Image 1 (cartoon, one colour):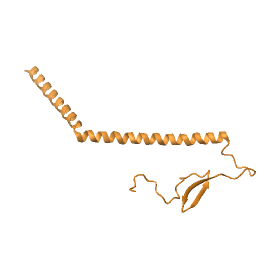
Image 2 (cartoon, rainbow, N blue to C red):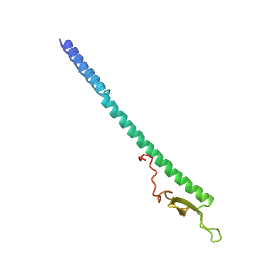
Image 3 (cartoon, rainbow, N blue to C red):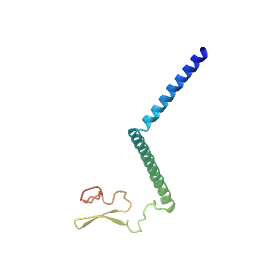
Length: 121
């Protein structure tokens, strides 16, 4: 009698465990759950790509500074040498705006024209 009770209880427990496992798996495979999982993976991949791009940008700036020091591009300007070259920034109403080559910034920041591809034209 004790053996029968033991095996009955073991079978019932195994049935409950198997039913719970199957129900969890079915819930994971619903379209809503799959869409949420895909969205989470996409966001995670986007964060990893952003971190990679930031690391590349930092290392690129560091290497550029090292090369500038090695080539002497960061040395002070001699008075006998000609002045700094200028770069044309943008044309506004027939006038050209100029800036020093050493200045960092967006070339078209002073322009009144928008270069947003997503704008309706």
